[in-house]
Length: 258
Image (cartoon, rainbow, N blue to C red; front, side, top):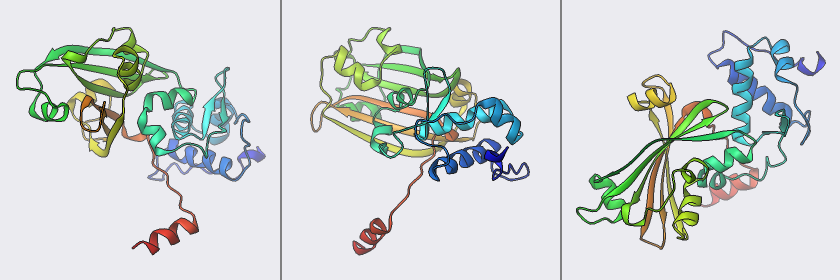
């Protein structure tokens, strides 16, 4: 078909097939061939014309949804998002869960652990706890379109904890704090870095030990120095791609400040 004439899948390329498809769709959106709010070709059409499996197509589409290029309409079809230029890294990292939902992805939360423990020194120092003060540890698996994408381990000081198990399955961490604890989050600090999968990552996410992971650590504060919550998110490495584009003016401004 004419609409696929510029697409070549190089099966011998070191680039994964899903990523080649992703780059192609992304380029078609950027050059205006597929307009904002329009449907892209169906999964079946993409499979037949690009010679790849439906699993590969779905992986490409899900990745583009998480990046903001696509979203799903009420019928489940992928359409070009009208939010492409509106997203910021802050929006994504502030609540990755809400970001995925906004993009039309079906996200389910499964509570896999809920317990009161004595924290280690790192958590104790982050949350400003006394020597024998306990925390509530919550482990939640985030499942996107029936595939485990990431999981979150969260620590709350026991004295603040007032959360129903039901709320743990429907809300983001900040929503939980503000709705259930009636506490306003005043500040969030984020740490983002790469890691490699360990045994726990393998067991919960089905990844190979040693495969790449994206790790987000977040600390939520109720004032400038008092932390109310500390969490770590372990995300499959292929589920997030950081894509930066600088204009000529931005490059000039950066060079002038050196």
